[in-house]
Image (spheres, rainbow, N blue to C red):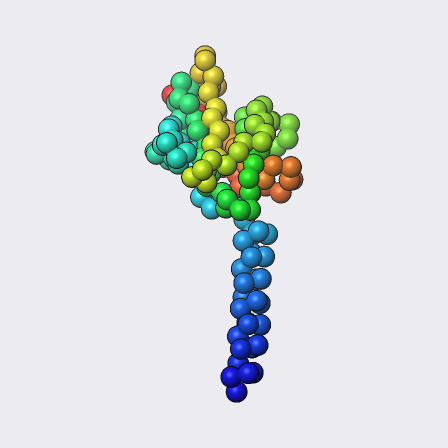
Length: 138
């Protein structure tokens, strides 16, 4: 009986481990994310918000799966999230030691009032990992 039990348990371990690995590497690569006015020393959002003032710096913070994603591309949009509305693309943002990606949006003269959006992609990939919308108003 023991001789049969060991191969069965080993087979179950391989199947379960393989399934978990597949899900980790092929599932969503971003675990948490937020738009915020500031980020902490790790890169995590300190005060998540979806409404900002024109003079604010808007930070985008995303926690990635460290083994599944090493670099990301963040794209900023004015208006609807559509290719024609892209105005800033930040490529090859590296994940930091704490597992976060961060990007920021600001303008010396202030951002125009209106609707904005931001998306994140695993660097070199066309599959969007997430999309967030926010508003700039006085």
